[in-house]
Image (cartoon, rainbow, N blue to C red):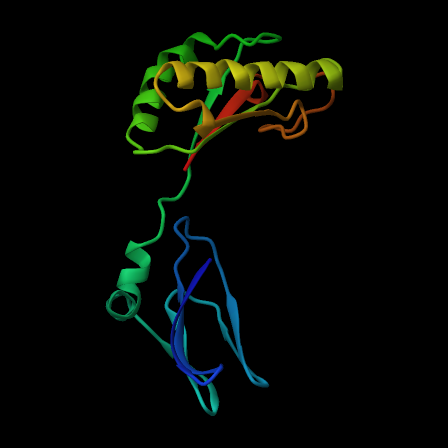
Amino acid sequence: MLALLAAGLGGCALNTGTVVLLPEKDGRDAAVAVRQDDRDAVLAQPYAAARLTRSGPQPYTSNPQEVAELFGAALAAQPARPTMYRLYFVEGKDELTDASRQLLDAVLSEIARYPVPDVVVVGHTDTVGTDKDNDALALRRAETIRKVLVERGIAPENVMAAGRGKREPFKPTADGVAEPLNRRVEIIVR
């Protein structure tokens, strides 16, 4: 959910401005409550807006043109949203599947487009094995990919590796299930 505020400040208290609820990128519903003194306005539709006045929030409907005029500079200054890539591993190993090995160069090319990438590599396992073994394997998987990223020119201090074991399955399963979608690393790039 992204709500934008353009405000005129009088003294120390906010007494004028505009709040606009922008549409979610994935189309999900969102809402925001705007409170001014003891008055509320709930914005629950894309481009629902409220003008903040001395008599409280005054709801109205904004539009993309007004958002560009009021908030264009702020929106342009936002950092890029993180990008996430998934690579999958052979059961019980820190070796990429053939399909993921073929994708690796494309993922590395995408990451190379960032001027100074900030990368987090998180290793995961399926639910086969003990927590201790899965934690160690998940970290080895993350470290394997971290090593490749560093070898390809990403500064070591910009790449962090972590292992989550079987704690965050992509596809929930019962304990002891060898699920290929859970044997993965997630590479998050900002």
